[in-house]
Length: 217
Image (cartoon, rainbow, N blue to C red; front, side, top):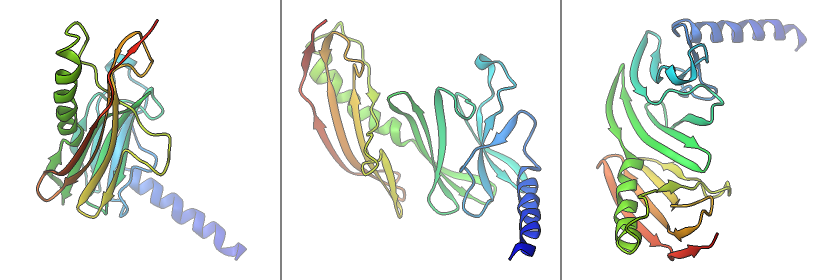
């Protein structure tokens, strides 16, 4: 068994080198961002650029190397805002941005060969539903309030923000206008929904408005 270890380490080194061979200067492959077959990956700026001038994150084909999509704003690994790739098979990936409280972006990219065949703006469409509610229930009554919707991710591992289920994407979203409990009117809402990747839209939406309360200083 011991005699096999050097060979194993050599093969792993060759694999890592071959995967990284086409990555341009200033970028690195994201941890856990490789597609299961190793063909695609999400690249991150390597912090060599000034923080306010970082290039976009890149969804790429590795061999031969080709940029398939740019994701902005570009952020390095471990930055305040994080960007992740979650694969559903080898050709469907959810690119999601996360900041302090929860999701700030969620798109599903479908790939075929060296092309993006479809992009599903899932969180943008979900945000439209939350906007309708905050405008009707909060801003009509309190017109001086700002139109602020912040998605709050659950700390419960059993209730993720989204999960693939075949050609469906189940969503479990909660939103808040003042998660820091600042004074003034406090609005919350939840949504349980399913995005159909074949139809390119929500097939089911359960929207649950929360109570409007007043936060005291």
